[in-house]
Image (cartoon, helix red, strand yellow):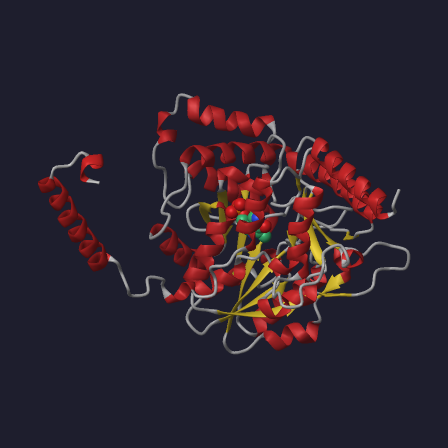
Length: 455
Ligand code: PMP
């Protein structure tokens, strides 16, 4: 062996000695104490990671994650290009930590009108790294150990871990579905809160309720009466409202998006969250914001300044310019918000037709770019695994990706652990996709339908 390695006896022993020293060093430096902070217990699992990985492995048509596969409008892209290649070289440097002045000014002007409030750009607006950071700031700034936070199920899945990481306790209340009108598909509007059940969730420990209208994944647009019910309970129990309105411009069939902060008595206790990613089809830019009274926002600013501190300047400048254009075109046919909703409504109807053809039962959404579909008729496609604790919808999705090349998201991911199994007959599709993608999905579903009928 010595000859093969070409080492002299001296070199050989030196190397052995070093190796022994190294393994002693490794043993000594290896940590044996637990490294994970307690606040991460139970929040580490995430179905998205698994689905995204699977979708990257098999060829597919992806109607899973919520982002457009088409270009943002030209005026939005041009605004970004101008921001990075224009004369103002300061747009490459840090800007104001709580929001680029041009952006907070336009947001205050735009949303002030909609909320019926005079908004101070410096104190009533905070720019964040997407709506995600806005949510994180809310929970970290406002929720204490022992506080309860009411979450309406189904819910955007990060609310639960974020409440827990802040030390709070999520308390769930479900939207309950009633039967669809005879001969009609079910609508997201058929899913409603039971007023008595909702009222029963408010206790002395309740600090906040999270409202997400239009709702991801269901697409429900809460009515004025439903908002008033929530607002009355918030005021009665002195509770805050965290209102996630990222899909505010995606509302169909003449429905109206109501901003809960605009209801009497609610401005003072509501934080409204928005996202340029959803609003201008630029999810990768990660520009979001919160609007609210200074007495609430000042605490969010504390979290922001001690964590993220600052959002990319050029992206903020581009969003500011995009809002300037929407300010000029508000309510007119030239408004991107008007055009986007019209286009999305057609895409929604297309996907609904494609799903009905294969025997899935879509729940027609009044808003967002998602829809949930009932797959009860497909229970026999994937064999039951009695010992598995994985919800059926999750196993179905994995099977569908591998065997049909179509990606969706299991709806059980949007329910709390005790309720997952009750809703594992539903999956979520995203339709903010270009025509070629929706056509490819239609083809897959048609082929599937033929196979089912044995043709
Ligand atoms: N809230 C809801 C309801 C969402 O669906 C999303 C994105 N999927 C977000 C917040 C996060 O938005 P952003 O991409 O701006 O961080």
